[in-house]
Length: 260
Image 1 (cartoon, helix red, strand yellow):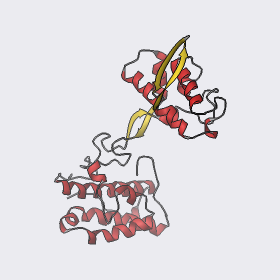
Image 2 (cartoon, rainbow, N blue to C red):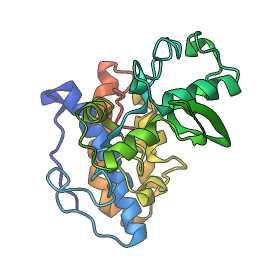
Image 3 (cartoon, rainbow, N blue to C red):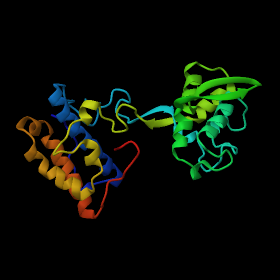
Image 4 (cartoon, rainbow, N blue to C red):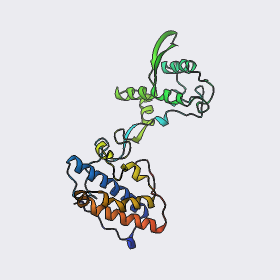
């Protein structure tokens, strides 16, 4: 059985702590039931041990350190002003490719990107493979597919560049991003696929306090005996915390990048 600290509404403590424990317990319920269906073991201590069913890539953190695409483009600027921050103020082959690519796709070089076709920003980040771009760099004509800023930076990083300038770029454009496997849910694909009363964990975590309380109160009747035995205490404690939040008038759980 999963052991958790009983909730005492008279000594509720930190409101944020209560909200976070609700998210952890909800995630644990989905993981436990998903693991039982897959024949996996259940941890004996919810508070101290790593949950079975958590994502194996981020180890249940929900984020990984990688390139942050949003940092690489300043859409309020034009290409001429340096909207592609990675290459702003520099003269290199990708800059010439981007100039010609913009011309091919009817993007104005001196007009803010935000005022033009929004799909072009994704192209700048991830590349364009529909047809190659002809350009001139250092008086030499060339033709190549535009690979995108994310690809170029990842290639620099993975090649182990020694250039101080390139390393500064890598450091600036790198940070925590949603885990590519669990998409920030912290759960393994198997656990994410579990539905309770027709809802995934991600959907349940977006409910209002009252909606989630009603969902949890109905949950035992929709589970089989084995699931109730495994998760019953956890469900009861989750209900107690939600009832407390509902009583004090909190409408929704605090949303965060890594908690959905």
